[in-house]
Length: 79
Ligand SMILES: [Zn+2]
Image (cartoon, rainbow, N blue to C red; front, side, top):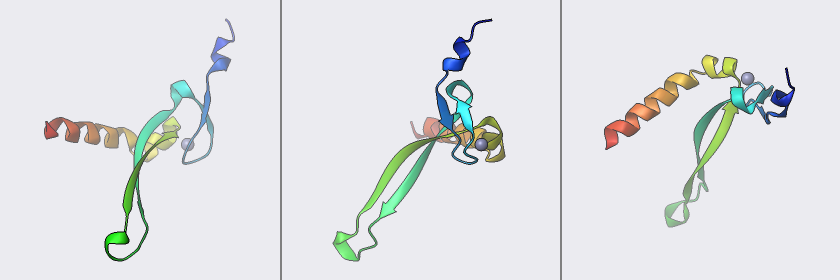
């Protein structure tokens, strides 16, 4: 068998830090809110979407699959 599989890009699990091949990583879109904590009109809350990656076991542990399903269902009902 060839060794082409070794060319898979490695990603690092957000939870345990383990290196995971791209093909086995579970991506999850995480929304973080940043606030400047200033009073009044100067206060700015920004939302940043960030894609994080988990290994399969962390994804299972963190119920990423269920959350992804949930998000997909919510998006569907909005339209
Ligand atoms: Zn992990």
